[in-house]
Image (cartoon, rainbow over all chains, first blue to last red; front, side):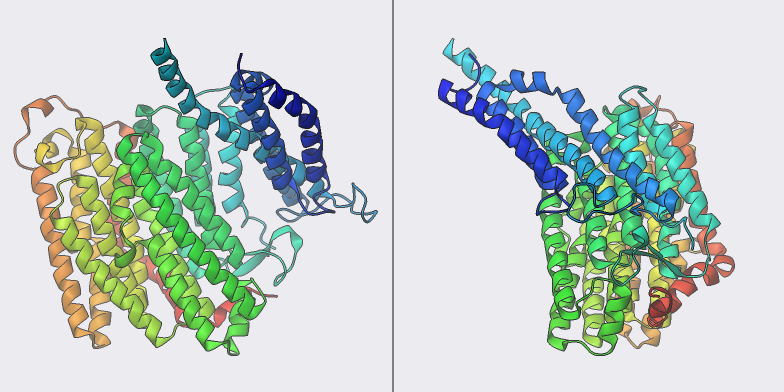
Length: 150
Length: 490
């Protein structure tokens, strides 16, 4: 059985939804409260890393494979650039071209919300992909150990 | 309002990410996308060369609050150098990188490095300078390790650690400047400092920047990473690192910050000249004994950057002109030499000079280009290296630095010795038996090298036609820095 003990798995199952929710909250409210795309993305990635530690690599790669992690990573960065270029078409590079109104509301900051989401996706996918890239080395060593045990 | 300026940063940055998305569906297009961006940027830099200086407010936020990009004569010079060298190197990279896997990742990192360099050159904001500096540096750390052999990873790690130290120190300097002036906008800061800033703090900031940018430009006490990092990278990246990165991130920042923002003071001039003199002498002595072609070239980079530093540190109009001219020339001939070393490696599989020989007969185009570059770097008339060294030496003698002038001549002589060795062992002499059936490299690689070889000849001979527009206007800005305040701020 892959992964850690039953206790860890149960706790992870209970926590993982809350961790993701909190990460998404931090990303979406980046323009109103401390935080933003980077912090929220790191939290989302930490959720995935916790899942990897508790349930094993196969489980989390089943949820988000390395191909899609890389795709999301590029897509996030490209969306960020696209928003900047939309502002460029409107007048200046990085111009905030969406109407700003309703102070302290979720939709009060124009493009900043979309930029935060793009950064969140990018950081989430790339930190997860870096973690998965590091585990490539682990597989080879654990294979050697199991051979020794046999 | 000139809207084209942010394209210099936006185009390579966007293509770096688009490239990775597109190559998930269509493989093998990344090189063509890169080529398209590079040609477009070269067209842009030539089309708008000589425009009146102006600033561009990012996002519509006016300085001193917002981030600005500034187009002036010094930026124009560097942008032109980067665009031309990038074109030649990209032409070379198209066939050369076929040897490696994961080409799309290579081209993405390459475009990020280009975007970082353009950003550093164009920015008018201190923190933005740091961000672009990090983009270019991080991309180059990854590119040095691109071959993922043990030696390359070690070199990359060394480069990463020392580069990280230098970035941290530069960031500390920027933080102290911010605390002293309360602004990050360069022009605003220059205006505040011109009215008199805290003297002791400014000297401390000078010391931090000399160390930080000295590490980036590999001046001698800080040069340890360069002889490992530059030879380990794939040849096009070696050419980019030696030809452009150490200039855009090192010397250019010194010129911009020390001369235009902070205002140069005599003791800093002396320090720059001492560092430059040490780099010249120690670099060339370390280079003479090398038998690895790329490692030899890397040590010569240290030595030649010493020339640039001496010229700029002299801070007389002629000295600065010589320094900037040598910067332009060194970018051309050192990139060409690294490309030639890559071409030799491509054909023969080795870069040890002792195993090569007689390649002039088998590879006439590469051999001739290599020969031209070697003569340029050693300062043989009428190639470009001669003229810039001559200007630096005349400037030193005019300013009555006779000893340093003599050292400069001596270093030039040592450079000649080591490149005579290079030519004897690689181009002339007898061809080893195992290389009897090697061929000239593919035509695109030859094109890249021939462009740079023609520039080596042309830059020397045609100085009267382009010198006024390109170099002397940049020199005038560095000599009269108060001009910067007139166009970089509203």
